[in-house]
Image (cartoon, rainbow, N blue to C red; front, top):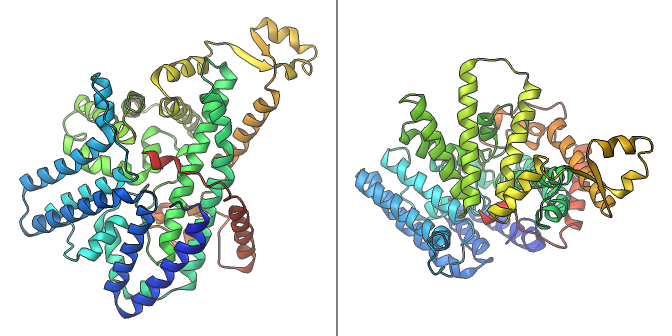
Length: 491
């Protein structure tokens, strides 16, 4: 089931909210069972055959977590982590490994959300062994793992930051402010998805799916369109997850915070998929040694972490290269920081954004050959070409442009203009406008949203804001005729 679908908005969500608050008044445990069962239905609506896999994973990790809470054991912890990774490896990487070894490729369908609920449970096992998490009630553990706002595309949760909220009796009493804040953030996120990301997608697809070797401006138009499509798609999902959870009175951790405004790659990763970055740091980079064993070891640890982070996103060499590029970026950033050479924030932000876009090519291209052809176009190896429609409007500049190597091609004028128009509009929203968390910062919509700088454009539960959100919600609903998956569902 999709957040951006009429069955979810008009049937599932109202029924789940009503049941949660009605049962919560009598028994918080009953409310937990209700919400967990609804979350399982939400997951099974996509493909019921993967429900046994999810439930088996939950039951085994729950039992092992209880054992680790009673008797911490590194051996049992290692066995639990290995079992989780083995299941993830089979479903996500068996085909990639078989193809790389030129073996018969098994027919394995990737269960949606397996990376997220696997990492969530690995974190729980580690925290249980370290005495940071304790959960003896199966209903609450089931809810912790399957809670539908985060189940299929994050954020990656820690037990200690989410489940204590369900112990607060106040969340079982519906509050108008929670509904106002939650609905505002939800419909803002839905607008990012259905009004922006889905309308930018055709411009990115037209270039990436065309193949061949695009010229400079065509290549950059395509990669920028994809960069903004992915930005608004994932930002939209993250907002929708936070908004939905706030309807229940529960705050999720912030997972997205204007990453394209980052002035360096470390800052980018503190703002993009923040809970995954936290997981990779706490459960991979730090155990590998972090920066405690000298600069050379630090750079190796960064590279290993980002390579595995790339592989987490998908089974393919493109994802490995994407992760490796970000590992190189982080190493270069730390080396540059050690030199203490000044650089203006705008310049640093532009360089960071260009580097991120360059790496997105490997994330989006269908294969390595296509990615390399695209990169050549971005670097100008295929020249600069404009549609013929521009030639007639250049007047005396035409000979000069031809002299410097600019060529013209037939057709595609409207496509070229529309692509760059969409890119320009998206860039203005990304770089000049506050994000949803900044607009609603006064009401602390997420667990760690206190770190967001409040915007002058501050939301408040007023009639004027209600009308604005009402118009946005209406536009959202009118755009649900063709629901599309969120991009991060495939990761």
